[in-house]
Image (cartoon, rainbow, N blue to C red; front, side, top):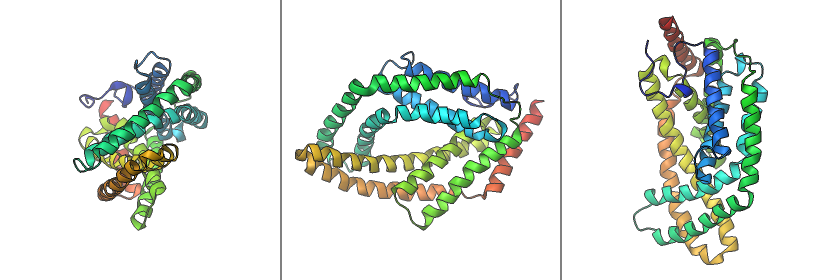
Length: 309
């Protein structure tokens, strides 16, 4: 059986290896990417390097969560990925605010607050650049030290116990948490609840992506739907964070108060639209009960493995 066309070998399970070998290969590749970006050997731009390193660490942590029941050193590996990512979270957040402002410009009615967005963007860029100039080096160095420890630790992980039942339990645990949060959201929500739901939905999206070769047609479609859902929720959360950031900006630069108020008002309407879209997509992505979803995808994995023997 051939693997999904166009899949990146380092980030999906493939034929010709055990599930444990596949996990270790992917995990090492993700950590190598993170180390490269944090050490300056990856993206030449520090802002982009932070972004790429954080993405790699998030994927690595998600992968570790998928196999937790089959890997005795789960807690230590999970902690290393988490701590490395946290060291650069402030730097990434400073850039994310600018990206959110640019995203908002595309979603806002044309001409609604263009001049206000321009003036606020200048200030946010100044703050991002100041953060990188003052604390960027030390924070990236701290993250690099932990990422390198995780990479060394990856070589001694016990992975022989990782099998289809391991993946089933990992899938079920993450999906079930997302499903429970979605049901809470359906009854009423605030920014934090939506954010927690998004994190669980994103873990599930990564898990489906790692397993896409088990049956590419349905799993690619599911991964795409989950990607759309998490983008809606991510944009909504970023707008909420931007709103809070503008409060701090205005406290230091009162002359931007009118601009900030205009942006926040328009953003409120955009958030309402994003939340409506997310709820509709969530109803589809989390339509199955946990046992049904886990059993279905596990059957894909087992059939795929049997065909590869």
